Length: 115
Image (cartoon, rainbow, N blue to C red; front, top):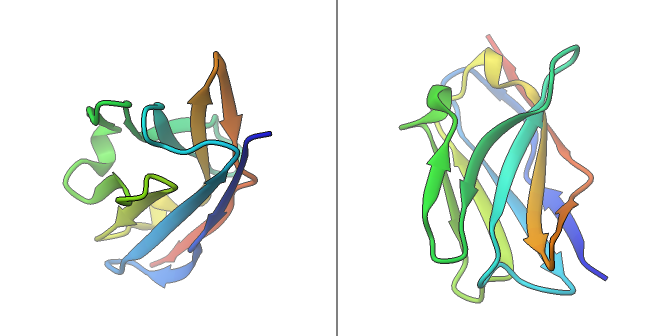
């Protein structure tokens, strides 16, 4: 059973930084595609950043240069470093992991950026 748990969300002022973490159990991020999505109130869920098994990165245009997705050396934790945060980054952030033809989701962590 694959289980993902996000942490690191919170309230931050505009211009500040947060680092989100996603811990996996049941598998790891070594050879699996993984990513971060977010959903703001009243909005569709959107892709923020992703990393393929070999390490190819992809970002939402509005976060390029500000956010960085990475994995730890043990490949059991996925990170999203978020710098220069803006009020429009406010959302619930979800971690995802593709494993055996299925996409798993975490429960989400709230990020709130005040102006």
